[in-house]
Image 1 (cartoon, rainbow, N blue to C red):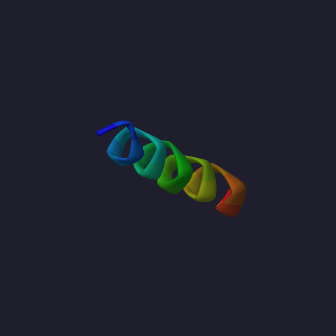
Image 2 (image 1 turned 90 degrees about the vertical axis):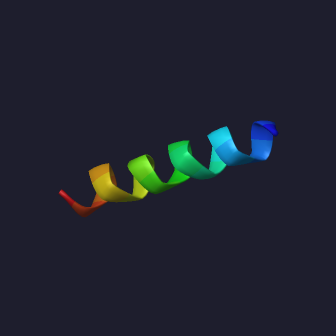
Amino acid sequence: MVSSTMNTLLEMAKGFLRF
């Protein structure tokens, strides 16, 4: 489902914020 894609994007965004 699209939720899976959104979840992945959110995880990536969190990783970028960490930097």
